[in-house]
Length: 67
Image (cartoon, rainbow, N blue to C red; front, side, top):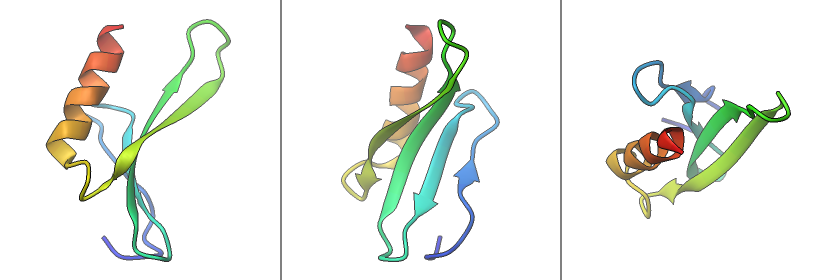
């Protein structure tokens, strides 16, 4: 993934997980979901690559969905 690329999203079990790449080259994992209480779209920043690996981000999303 290069700076300026469009965000990449997952449509499988971890639907809502996105990866963005800033102009500085920093890759960020974001979880997007619609709040069941308010109906609004919520974005939670999970962390930056390489501090947070893709597999770890996927595990976090699965845990959040269970809540």
